Length: 209
Image 1 (cartoon, rainbow, N blue to C red):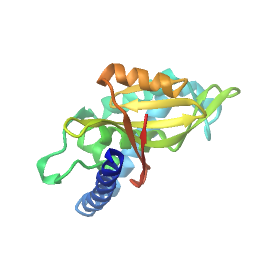
Image 2 (cartoon, helix red, strand yellow; image 1 turned 60 degrees about the vertical axis):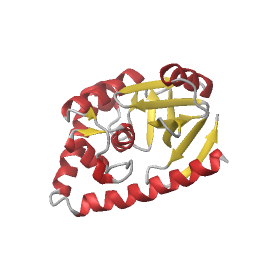
Image 3 (cartoon, helix red, strand yellow; image 1 turned 90 degrees about the horizontal axis):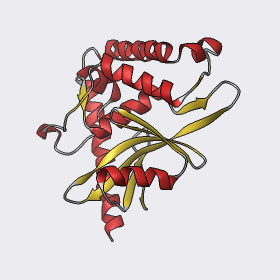
């Protein structure tokens, strides 16, 4: 029963977030120039953090986890990204457009997750150019604590049983789902459900863990 009601809440969250994003872009008169700036800074951060890998294979570089951390750290610093809860006029927690999250310099955990997906991409190679794993974006995962205290959103990429995770300012890599659960239960306490949303804000399901 709890899983059913969580599914309804997630579907509403996705729907309202898609509507809100459309309104954000519609009322932003200089959206395209902001988008160009963000994409330029992403490319600069890639070159800065991954110079040796990027130089070796400009079309499809492979990165270490430390290089990915440096990339995300640089973007956070460049846009002065800080955590801020959604404001009352949003009517509900929403996942804002990533370009506008970067240029506004603030957002909550789901905004960070969406922006991480935008910056890192759908696929990311972790390792070196000869021996790497291709992680594919598995969705924005929302760890659900309870109805009262809400949850925490993460950007998650997956390669078989390995997980690459961006949580607000931090980057993690886990060799198993158990490692992932152990880490975040250590941070947030026990939780039993994870809701999943696609990068285009479609509901993927709620899983019991």
